[in-house]
Length: 290
Ligand SMILES: C[S@@+](CC[C@H](N)C(=O)[O-])C[C@H]1O[C@@H](n2cnc3c(N)ncnc32)[C@H](O)[C@@H]1O
Image 1 (spheres, rainbow, N blue to C red):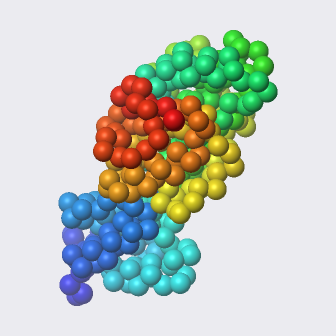
Image 2 (image 1 turned 90 degrees about the horizontal axis):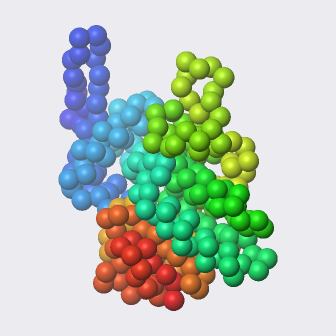
């Protein structure tokens, strides 16, 4: 039996689980770090192995050697890397995650924009949007504001590296328990229940879906060809995966897409301390572009 294959007897059938050697881990983690900036210290080896084992199974491969040869082949670079990154990235998210940010948006940022808007559309970018809960929460906050403030228009640009997450986001179908924390009156306005009540699923209403434009964007890429510049950028719980140097690079590029006096929101455990950026600190995790 090949050394990297471990046979585990279960009560029902035999499973063959490929084992990732240290050298193979170094090769993959080095590549992921270099091309996607995602930190992969040795403690992540077990996580990477177990997530990729599923992928090997889907491809009918029995060893990581075979998989790595494929990833680094021309075909693999075109077809497999996207799938590999889908399993590598951590996509945890929620509606109204870190609710203080939506309060600041509604009570401070939007009124400030509205008072000096002229004919401008309010543009906001959710960078690292995962399965869509963040941009749809933004959409709900903006729709509520639009209802109270005539003439206010908005558009939301949402990007992620994971095509799998973007597909979920575009479908906009979620389990009912994901929206438990949302007040009933808001749920009724912005979510449709599935016809089959046993499914316990909801879908964002078309009027809100059409306000969000999703696209794949790797934050490690040299340039961000976003369609616009933005009044606000949410880049929350994404930077934690990158080392300081990559964080500096990503935030510098984000600042080039953020309008002067625009706002940047980061995740609760992220900071810009020690980074050289044209940003003024307003609140923990909320910054204004100079
Ligand atoms: C933990 S989720 C955060 C989702 C949302 N912003 C929130 O705070 O709830 C992190 C997201 O960053 C994305 N991501 C990781 N590396 C990325 C990269 N290099 N470029 C773009 N997105 C990336 C992941 O695919 C994932 O969906």
